[in-house]
Image (cartoon, rainbow, N blue to C red; front, top):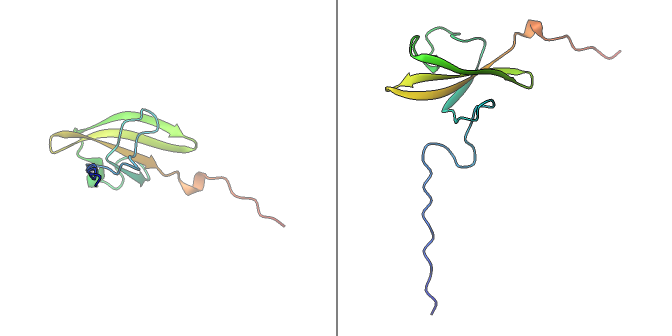
Length: 99
């Protein structure tokens, strides 16, 4: 009788192996991301961390979307986050209507 081989144990920690969000500019893995109107809006939101404990790493565009990759302190460790800036709807060009 043939001996069965043991199936290897898969260990995934932190993020899913299928999707790990990264910064589009520098490629560093980010732990959280959100769509915001502007940085520090709304004021006091925990996503942005505290003032003085936040540093901007990248500020760029991907296509037409602007984003800011920043680092904040969380439990005395660096936490990489991505803020997608939502453009103001008043700035968008009006779509032409078909007659």
